[in-house]
Image (cartoon, rainbow, N blue to C red; front, side, top):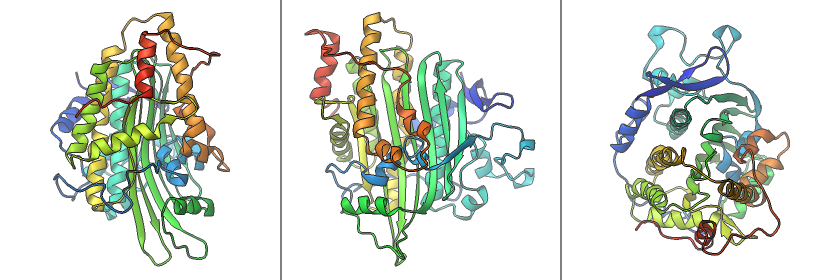
Length: 442
């Protein structure tokens, strides 16, 4: 059955509804066929090779330090911290909200029709997007808006009745974003899918942190203009047999004093199950590998290891989950090639995760299993607050939007003194995998 996100009266909510644009089945088929949704006037799909071999596409541990790491949480986890939040455009036009179209039927075009399926209007004005259809910033903004809508649609369909609150926020220094959050649903305890499109001048602290990881940045009068955008999501199901999921894809651009522009992409996704299901792990990693393999056979193993290394809770000696892929500072072989790779990864989000939730959302579980889920969520909180540099950067940024930064945290978690699972138990089984990562596909 086909579904789409329908508007609920005049309130800032979306629900699953039958029919209409952006319907999940058609999108899933396009994804399965490896077709790519592109802005008008851009080239069709083609496979690329050689990603990740440039001077700054390093395989070492450079997990988005400084502002780049804050942009690892771009869509509400950290970069949204810069913004002032206001309610989204789920209100009558008489209220003054900006319309998705230009207001006249004859001015409607492919871009406007595409945007009409988004959760809200793009952050950048449509006229500006039309003026630069082939620019990677236009293509990336449309990709993250489309990804947000498709993921929210899929989550609403699975939940069967939950609503997304949609907050549009603006950053006085430039840009803004859209935060979509579902809480206390039938299936999901908390799910957030956020986008951010921001620009302005980097602070001296942010520039210093970028230089510390190898960036050579030349300022003019102490200013360094930048543009950044991304989509980020964290999903916490209620059932302990349905895994927690996180993904993020982002683009960053800096203009130096001489007019030279440095650019790079970053992102990834990872799975955090409460209990190990090997079939689920293989499905998740195989889907990511298939997306990566379209652009080079070396990408999945490289980015899989990077993910295992980054999501490491050092004081516990274990990973946050069973991994996925993670990359940053990806700037070769070309901007278009890396964008296509990121696009393939974004299109793998729904098919990698949604089948797992559908499979387990109605599984029976015991009080003991629910307790273990709460303890594992405690570890999730520990990583995000102690190690995630994007979250820490946002929390220490003046004028931060704390609610957006902490969107990644579950509604509930638990800590018990000296808790240790029984030997040979299902709880001990997942701990072994978290302490010693496995290769799920070859």
